[in-house]
Image (cartoon, rainbow, N blue to C red; front, side):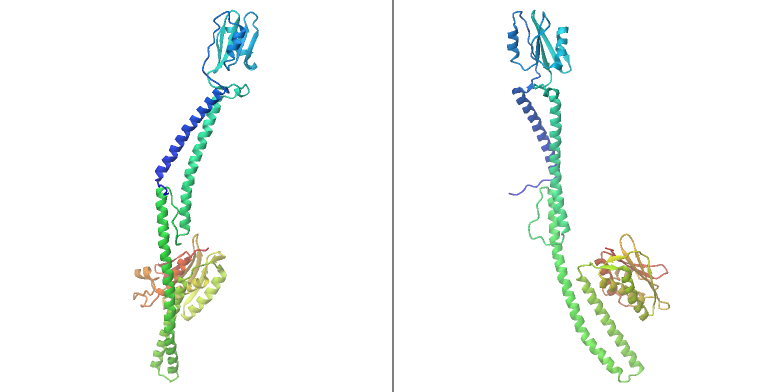
Amino acid sequence: MKNKIHSMKWRIWKTAFEIFIETFLGLGLLLAITFILQKAGYILNPNKVYLVLDSDKTTLTDIRQTMKKYPYDFIVFDRRTGKIVTSRYQKNDKDNYYLAKVKNKSYINGTTSYTISSNKLYSLVIRQNSVPEFTNPVLRKFSYNQISYIFLIIYESLIIIIAIYKLIHEISKNFTAIQKIALNMGNKVTKDYPKSKIKEFDTVLKQLYQKSNELSTLIETERIEKEDLSFQVAALSHDIKTPLTVLKGNIELLELTNPDKRQLEFMESMKNSIQTLENYFNTMINYTKLLNLNSISEEIDLNEFIKELFLELTDIAIVNKTNNRLKVKTNLKKFHANVPALKRALINIFLNACQYADKSNPQVSVTVTEDLKFLWFEIWNNGAPFSEEAQVNAQKLFFTEDKGRSGKHYGIGLSFAQAVAVRHGGTMIITNLVNDGVSVKLGIQEF
C-alpha cells in the first residue's frame, strides 16, 4: 500500500486537530466517569432535594424511611427536648446543623447548604452541596471539582506532549535520513530511498539520493580517468626515456671525439634539454600519483620535517646560485600530511622561486606560520611580479607566458602544489608584493 504524502503545513494542522479531538474525548470521558460514579452512589448529585414536614402526623419512622432513599447527611431534632433523635452526619459538621436549627432557617457554608424543615414534633436539617462531592466521608475532604480539573490538566498535558513528540519524532526521523545520505554522499544507492510522509522532506531525500548516485558515477568516471592518465603518463615516460637514454649515450660518445668549442656548446644544450624533459616527465608522474592519493593519515613532527626539507631546498639554492633563508614563526609541534607529496609541492614552488628570482642578486626565503585555520608555508623571491594572467592561470598544467617569465613553463610545478594543497584541505595563494618580489603561500589543515 502506497503511503500518502502531505505537506508540512498539513502535518502540523493534523497534530492540532488530534489535540482538539483528544481534548474533546477527555471531556467526554470525565463526564462519563462522573455519571457512572453518581449512578453507583459514590458521588452526591448537586441537585437540590426539598423535604417538607407539612404534617404533624409525620412520625420519626416516616422520616427515616424517606431519608433512606437519599444519600444526603441529615439530623432530626426533637423540638421539645432539642436532642438528636436520628441522624446520618459527620461530627465536624455538627455545629452547622445546630446553627440551622437555632436560626430556624436554612444555613449556607461555602458551597454547602443546611436546609431545615419542621413540624410541631421534629426539625429535619439536610446537608446538600451545590457541587459534586464524594459520599465517602474520608474522600469528601477532597474536592471532586479540583480532582476533575487536575485530571483535565494532566490529560491535556499528556496529549499535547504525545502529539508534539510524535511530530518531532517524525521530523527528526526525516532529518536523520537526510544526515545519513549527506554523510554517505557519493555512494551508489542500489535500493529505493526511504520515503517520507512529509512532502518537503521527501523531495529533499529524493534529490539527495539522486545527486549521490550522480556523484558516485562521476567519482567512478574520474577514478577510471585518473588510472588511465597514470598509465598513459607512465607508458609515455617509458617510451620517451629509451630514446633519451640513447641520445645521452651518443652525446657522451661525441664528447670523446675531441669536439671544438662550438660543438661542446651544442652538446651541453642538448644535455640540458634532455634533463629538462626528464624533469617534466618525473613531475607529471608525481602529479598523476597525487591524483590517485586517497588518504593522508601520517602524523609528522614539524621541526624534523622543516629540517629535512630545508636541507633539500639548500641544495637546490646552491645549484641555482641563490641566497636562501628560513623563518619559523609557529610553536606547532605536530601536523598531519602526506610527506612525499607535500615535500615535492614545496620543492616545486621553491625551484620556481629560484629560477625567477632577480638575476643580479637572487634572494629566496621560506617562512612557516600558522593561523586558526591553516599551517602556512610561504616561499618568497625578489623576482619580477606575476602578470594578471599568470596569477589566475599559473597553477594550471603547462601554462606559460612570455611576459616577465621568459616563456618558461612553471604551470606543472604550481599545478602539482595546488593539487597537494587541495588534497590536504587547504589552498595556495599567489601574491605580488609592491616593489618587493613575489610570494606563493601553500596552506594545509593541521589535522
